[in-house]
Image 1: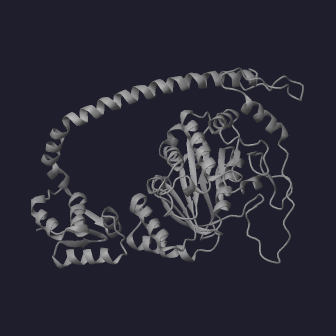
Image 2 (image 1 turned 60 degrees about the vertical axis):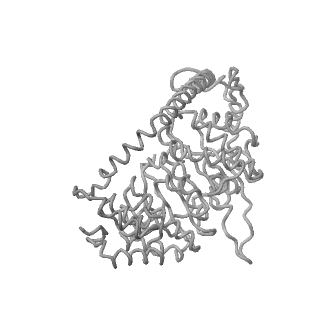
Image 3 (image 1 turned 180 degrees about the vertical axis):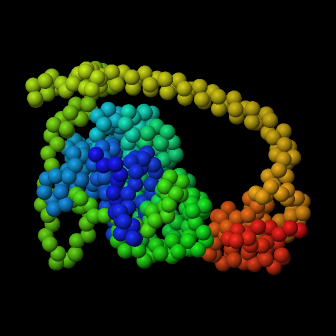
Length: 467
């Protein structure tokens, strides 16, 4: 079994690998159409299959099924179950998101949920139910969730069913690792993904992006998530390079997990790529034949059709045994039935805990309302403590308050930010005051601080002068 996931190579030609721990990490894959986003994500899925790691792909565009065939379209690939779409092993019930989550975890399989035939609202409804149910359960084995067309589920301005899918996916991204889940969000643009969800992704695979707003959004991600990894010059190089990246060439940023900033090139897929761009006059489409996973499908179908409230019934095994023996020496149907009963008990326990949490929150809200005047007074009293700079010297806010009032606007906020943090890089200062470090308004505000003799540079850091 593979000890690392080999995803491509570095600029030096050395292999680019990531550890198995990726299965419970969060990743955003963002690049415009034609760069190879789906190739990058399916490269990861292929490597996980070979390493024995589990995953599920939410596929509203219908291109992941090629993992069941060799690159040339002949039967092969990986034993991955396909639910829904034109190549379905099992038809998709669009209202069965929670039920499918139960079955996927119980059978410990890799699964593609092809929703290319469903409406956008149906996809959002299904994903909300599926992710909510995942978060109700603790998988016996960690699992990664790939989500194609992420902005449809976690948009900047959610409406209707998008509010449910946004809440469910946001919860998976923020809290999933605690329960054994990782996730990859796949999108053509930065600016269309809900900002709070995007900044919860602790890793970024960045490909070609042309739009100005998207380059600015990528810069904002750096300021929020990876500021400590970047100097101002390095961040500028990254942002300017995005428009000129070739297909498959990009950057991998991992400020917390791998603590790296790498220029990489994705490897080719090992399996068939249905979404490959075809040129006029090129070769005729391949007649694809998928590998046979009939026994696999029958086993999963029986679990999916069983009701959690009744004993699970299994058809006889065609090999002659009534059922495959588990590692614990018990028939598999007894293990699955026991799991269902445990699931029901856990669900009741979770409902009880939620009621207790709701009661606690009501008490906390009441206490907050009662003590708010006292809290406001204490907050003003201790405001000076927040003005202690990072080098340990006390900063008298009263000296700077007239300047904050006089400058006003973003310039005043820049003074406040430096009061709190002591010293900041240009990118950090711009991010904390909701500006772009390359914008004209930020440069004007910096000029105003310089003209008035308020700031000075110390290496790549900006700080307030002693007054």
